Length: 318
Image (cartoon, one colour):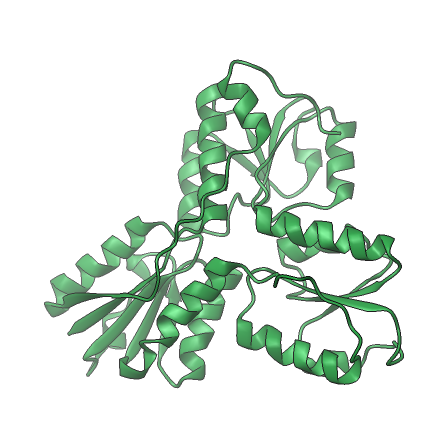
């Protein structure tokens, strides 16, 4: 068996920052820390922090007043920030800067009187946070068919934003239909889809033609990981999304000569190593690196953490 190990893969800069942020908070404060939603969408990562004593919550009612609360990489709405302030929570914002960019674009367009078409997946944490910035003037669409249901006239003052973890093909299909129906729709000068999401999709697209099977390491609730699996399926390649090596099934590899292995932007490299070792052990696999491009992006820790590192303290959300 030949295994093509796609690169770039695994942690993106936003995920690395969020994880480092939580690790540093534990080092400075101790593990009695609460995180609003999963810090990143990966079960392995979340389990590790839970074992250290971190508590992940779905509502702020679960957080005792005055506690330390970390906002996840996916961002939160202004309503959540106000609720945290009301509970006198000490907050650390680990929102990915690329998600923050979309939030700021939503605020800017809303202030300028635009109605905003937000392309993304209903219920995703990132979408919930972005919708909360201007709920009175943002409409969510997921497919080109949803564009047909929009109530706006062709000349209406509209702007378009996208979830950062979408497939480029998926987003472009909706954007193309939007531009056909609303030729004057505005969009940001730079695209919203995360560079890392695009890089990981491009990396497997470049090698899928030679693949008999695609294995994506990542969690089922990870949007960018699911897009990688869907990319393989769209090319007719049997594709599986798994959290860890224990979910692999020997029957998937029957009559398979070439396997492409990648990892979503929130999946740790340790699970990739375990997968490679599994394929070596069971199939005497040879491993080849398939590097599309290098990534060198780094995001600084939020200023709250920088204060803690320097012996300072953090204040309640405001």
